Amino acid sequence: MMSERVFADILAAKLRGCYEKAVHVFRTIHRMDHFHTEMDRCPRCFRTKDGMKVKVNAIPCRKEIGCDRCHREGCEIEEKAGEDLQAFYQCPHALLPLNDTTDECHCQSRLLAVHLGSAYPAIRPENSPDLKQRSNSPPRRKK
Image (cartoon, rainbow, N blue to C red; front, side, top):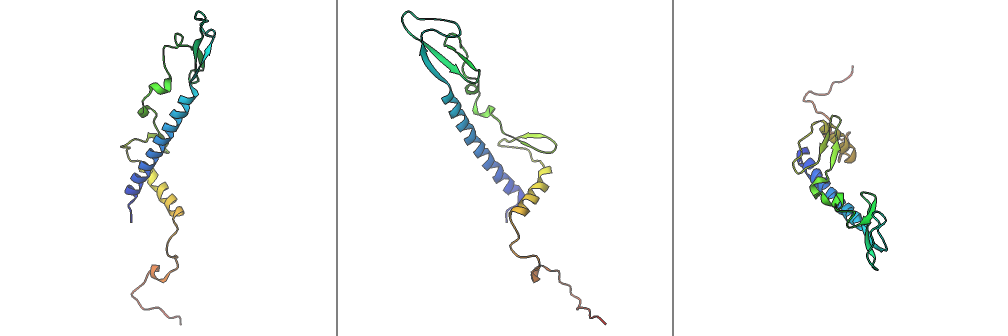
């Protein structure tokens, strides 16, 4: 049988893996939200090119539209490394980060035991004869 600590480590590793996949999907979708188009002039700075079109970028994370000269800075989310997008879990006493080495929180042990007890019913019924306490004294007869 697996100890609670080993089981908790396995669950935490699975959560980290799921979170990394969710971050990857979020960043991919966000990258797709950034787009550019060709226009006669920039709607922000009104820059024009002689007889040519200006490349105008749409940046949804800043809610801005403008040409390359207007937007010297890139996307706020893409500038952050993957480690900056941090997962947390809420304990009754604190908000704790879910890292590769997360400190143990003992307040969750009771909740985990209750949850596991309801998720996995007992293999044997409780009224089974081998689970009843046996006494070495002979049974008492009623008079």
